[in-house]
Length: 579
Image 1 (cartoon, rainbow, N blue to C red):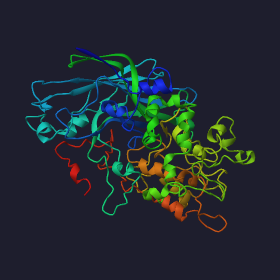
Image 2: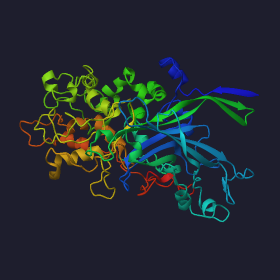
Image 3: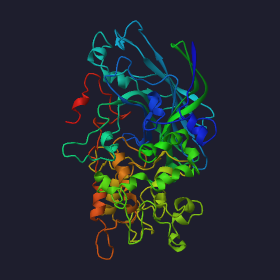
Image 4: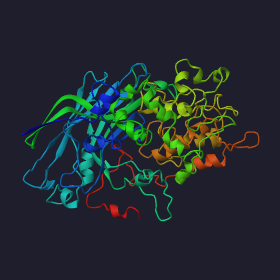
């Protein structure tokens, strides 16, 4: 009997919401993609390579929460999926300029055994083809053929043993790194999950850090694996057309790129007699990811599939989603007038209600909307294009910080400069801080490739990314003037995303108003008439906030692909992770 299944990952969402050809859903937090782990994005990273300043490394991971001991059918990439990493480098053109597309094939070298590896043979052995488009996905060129995907690290008998592969896993993993015909270094295979977060606490109504005396916070992703795609790309490949080979400064706007990843499947799958599959129809996007935690903690459950069903470029002008950034739900749990008392873990995170005596950024307040034309003069708010976008109306307080962080990046323009040099006026010119402005579409990582990498072994390296850089720029005597300087961690999230960046903490601090404070919109307990320093108790509370899970469970590598090797199936013990 033949069964015909229409793969509908998001079809209903699009029919209802868009009324047009189907795209589909995204990573695990969305209801539809939770049923399709092989196509499920987990994380995206983009950073200047720490060991090669001429390159940028792009990483996209898939297939969440893999048990290392999860045999006999160990995890690997899907054959019928297009895994893509997208790069936008030109705000003047809507859409991607560069796309890397991975497709996979799988082979059973010894179908007579139930073991995954035996006597030098691998079952579910995967290889890949990598194609690259440099013209907005109009044409693709193959740049890697028959790329090797390393097998799962099952255990010592399967890998090192004479009855297995008779080698070391590290040598297999290293040997799978390829060089594309166009010069990129490429890796596709299993790795440790680089994300770290107390999943149990966060989703238990915001109990992070956990408040129970005997309930310690813990990394909910410790000792789990994912499958990772990594590409080390020369900056010259990623530059917009016409950009100079050398940046004019560390904030050169021509060096800004946007990065996001997706997975797509054929629209129709036919299963014949239960043992044969035929896919047909156009490829349908079933997952996408750019900025971390957008869909997890900003988009509500009822809109998650809709968010996943559209590309970043379809977010342009989408007022349906904007309200969740203007008035984020998380802010309600940081506001004593709303539900802060119900989430004691967020007690250090309190929004500005009367910054400098007058500016209220709690949900439903006006934020900076009440600025006069005279006050706006010389700022980006006076720009006829971007002013109305950043100050769209009353009752939308976070349109000036959270919305642009996720949708446009931040320009090196007033008032988006550090308070250093502003003389107490947050709208004045201050210390240049970051420029990853790419107002082309919506949710994607935005990275200014001109910003040098902070050495990972530096004492100044900090997993708080731009939050740490702002603190240094505001408090360190070496950065006391308003000149442009490379501040350590200016290459950190949300200017791209490094593997080490503690994005959960950074984003919670951002919702708590830390970006506003960095530009001089200080917390309510600062009185410029009486206080010598704006480093007040409320500001320190936000800066010192921690989820108590601040680093990965494995050290990252210092060389490409930088992610840690996957956990071995015989070495993990999830029962002891709380100890």
